[in-house]
Length: 148
Image (tube, rainbow, N blue to C red):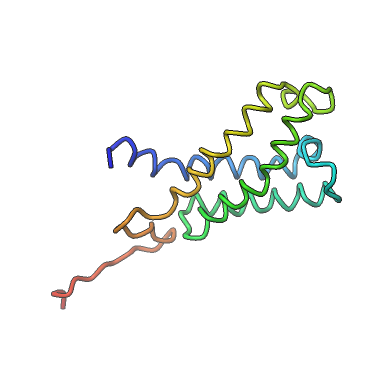
C-alpha cells in the first residue's frame, strides 16, 4: 500500500470522528434543520433527530479513540441516515428547507458523499496484520516467544 493511502487510512476515521461529534452536538443545539430533511413518513421527527445525534456522538468518540466497534457502527449509521439525504435532495429548491439545504447542488452533492464517508468509517479497523490502537491511557505490550 502506498504511503499516501496509508496516511489517508489513518486520518480518515479521526476526521470523520470529529465531524460526527460536531454534527451530533448540532442535533441537540439546532434540531429543526435536521427535522426538515427527514422523510415525512417517519413519525416523531424530534426523537429521531435526538437519537441520531446521540448515535453520532457515540460513533464520533469511538472513531476518535479507535474503538473496534466504531467503524462498523459509523458505517451503519451513515447508511441509516442516507434516506434523509435523499429526502433533502428531493425537496431542494422547493423552499421547504432552511438555508443552504434548499440549494439543489448542495443537496444532491450530499447523496454520493455518503460513499466516501462510509469508506472513512471502515478505515478505523486495523490493516491486515496490524493491531488496533490501544484504549487511551493503556499501553499495548506484545511479548515474543523468547521473552522471559
